[in-house]
Figure 1 (cartoon, rainbow, N blue to C red):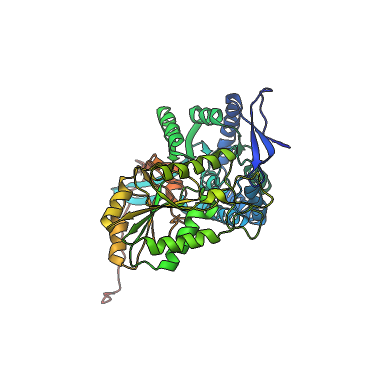
Figure 2 (figure 1 turned 90 degrees about the vertical axis):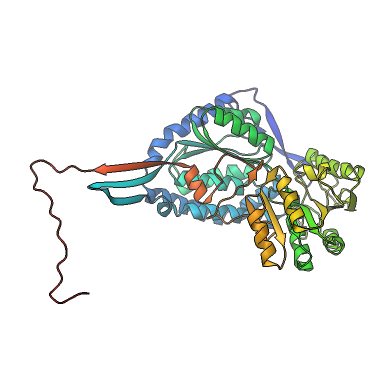
Length: 496
């Protein structure tokens, strides 16, 4: 069994790492203590001045080399994700590809960091503005996207001239270990990118550390609120992305087959363990035809180990999480919902101890039920029936989360009304999972985001830098002749 990480404390705690498909422990992670975190931050702080003063051209060469190494090792990264998270290899490869998109965005930092300049804002006075790095930036990331979500953060921070300390999920530590090697091979100076493993103690030590200039967090809403409050109280810049309850509103004119396909992919992809998964389908009018189409597709999905090429959906990340998600199904039935597809009965041959839960479809869900109120974070689609588009928008807007929402319709006016009035940060129109590409920014509203800045894109550049405005006047020396202003004289009779 592998031992990941190290600590100066001989009695340091460890956390087990499992293969979710078999239930077997494959490694243990040594939890960093507060002194361990302090050493990492101090090392990053010492590396900052030299990296800040490294030219944009030299920094960009490192980013391009890192990008090439990520492409070369994309299958290695994907296999590590599958081994410790459980998602099928195609999903893992997709995650790696979306992460590399942000690396590619960061390769354009020389253009993105171009400042502003205005000549003669007043007589003999020029104005300009530049963006400068912050110092040590910390990232705290979740288990469900152990490659992509960290890549939302550190490529932009490092390209801007900051140093970066990453605390990945202790459940899926190995992809970040490989990333450290790739940065080293790309030529990144020592301690510009630093990895610390651990749990809540390491999180609090990073958030509280006076040497950390900014904290970027992605995870559950309670922890996001905790991180934001703690960092904000310490005067640290912070963006904390929390949980979600993403809705898909389906109007009567929506194309039945393509909508059902999209909902199944959005609800059951990565076993529903993603913050942009659709978990609530809000059907306007008769829900029965769509329900039948989704149920047929859900039952046809193949559940199995992520390494099985035939598998459409892998296991959940831990046994405890699998039990938690199954508990929501028990509660839904007790509260009066109808369980149309019951994934609790799924059997995976040869994986009796794996953390498998098949696709689940719950009909006649109401907003009062726990399966609707909470972020389930599993392969559970809840169907809510409403009478109008305005009722559907009101339902979405009343929810305390505001990550994303989608509408399926052929009516452009209805789609425009939804896009304008729905209170979420990311909207899909006939797109179930509206995750923006790398050069746009990702983030929600309400209880899905604490802080002002979203991640990656230009929001990420602004978060990882501070603005400096400069006003310049160069007085004319007393001994110098007065400057002459001369205009261009055109030849006689030439009015062009």
